[in-house]
Image (cartoon, rainbow, N blue to C red; front, side):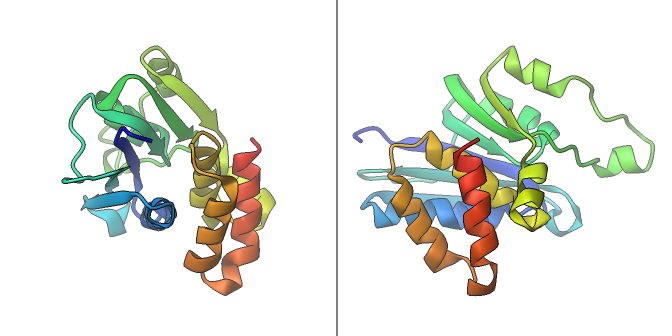
Length: 190
């Protein structure tokens, strides 16, 4: 790989976006790439937006991804995917969990959750939508949504599946490893 890859991971606090970015970062480091990560937290512990920029390649100087630059957006929630859409480059890909998590304005009745988000995204980007929550349940734990999505990202990457699995083995706590390996496989084979 000669080009620098630019991936944005977006979601809501508590969804496991930070573990997903650590798995991605550790995998590309293991493959010999230079990697830079930058985490941006909005009220993450209260269900607010969480964004992680991940850039990797032969030499990377900054983790920041500007508008129209992301190769891939890995989105843990539909509205977060839509918010991140301006950052996707033309011809880029969005992998999105179809789960909807109401932001605070919707919860308190000050706004409505936007309708037909997937269709709006599909009109502007290469969209891969998945009910990652159902796959995580199938793996044995609803908190494994992040690893389902990492499995989907791995499938579309140039990095060998074995490298991703090895990173899971060294990054995920042992008591959660079996569930996460199942979640990865379900995402990878989706």
